[in-house]
Length: 628
Image (cartoon, rainbow, N blue to C red; front, side, top):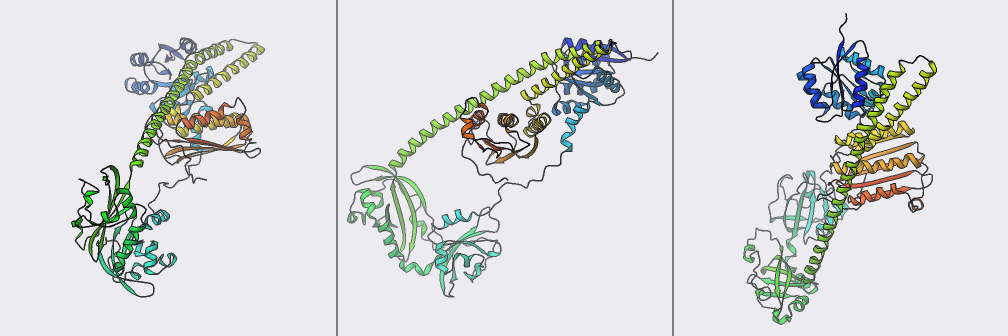
């Protein structure tokens, strides 16, 4: 007599468990040896009974399927485990297969398929429906994603930004690249050497500083003096300084001062002081004022005669300058200026907050200091108001982000609860009914009765399929595993199977999103794609997932019939479009919808990478995107 195969059934739903038990017991080649209602009981019973085949429900309390499988592979290595579940998504399948099961069946599978899978499991052979295997292996059939070069910005010089900065320098400024070729020159440098910008670009530094032989990779000596040569061949004494440009590779910035112009320094300085829109004063090394602008008279309420020769501490009392004027007497040292906030005092002893710019000046007559003083009373008031306004805005933004975080959490928890109810109740009941129905069908002999029973069986299978799709829509397991791209790809594959709409999906996001941001992006994309299936009559839809400006940009473009956004969005009932806008705005991002009749539709939305409810960049300005 042939020994029967010992089989154990583990399922937390009583109806399904009893139906599977009756199915196994009715087969002459199988012996039902045990039942279990949760993972803990399954491990304990299987470790004791050592069944040849364990029919294991994936979703049971007191544990998880992958852990149960790995534990039993150690405690009952001869037991072959066959997974059974209502979930048919790739992540759920691969988790338990990777743990060591020999097959995966979806609830609602025909009784014959279940019995055949048990037989194959006893032989150590693998079992999976062709439809499920195709869904799991589909990603392997796609061409590999094109290599995307590193999109992080490379170190380069922003010419316009540099020129704006260099134009403010009081001396000539040159920026050189590899081999000491000139790349940028400010107006002072062009005027000093007599070249146009085009003539200087690419010229060797040695053409301007013929006796300067410092290798390009070395730093310049601060305050070094060397002859310089103009375009017409004439030479003049110059002081040079500068060094390597941080982050610029072989690039250097070089400052050139024409020493031949020092004789006219006094005249130019007097003109500068007289025309200054701010209070400007020239102070000697003893702290006495030598020159003062008209604005200085007005600010401090002193006449010009009173200011000249007055000690600086009378106007800026008890607050000495942070840099000693006597420290600038070394001719090898290149003077450097600074700015400081002090308290000024007028002639009537009234005080005011002042922003004081301190600039050293070396002249043939000796060292001087140029002070520019600005009353910042109104600036501080405006700053205080601005800071309070920003605090209110930040508080509002935190409240908004916290609300969004709470809404997303509540919505997802409700979806999970509904999905669990469908799995634990509706699907289990339909599965049990299907198994009982198939047992009854084997007893029928009338062909008409068999035909009616087959149609009823197909109806139950269709119901299970739609319920599994509903579970996926409510709770995509890909998101729980941290894969937004996989969840979107699965949604697009199912959309194509149901509607025939072809899709092109590009995942160029190289950053891992926070869970709540990932859920928000997926739900928003889902809403836009549902609109495509319902209204667009499109043949193809292109979906791009991009990383742009420290955020995630989703772009969905279809070739459908299009519409007039102003007309459609003004009608009541179009909640999908409203939800897209509101989700993006509440996340601190933006959304954009472009369409016209006959021209298809483009939906874009961008959200920052910072997780809702946390401190991050919530700027809602539209980022620049160079993707095609």
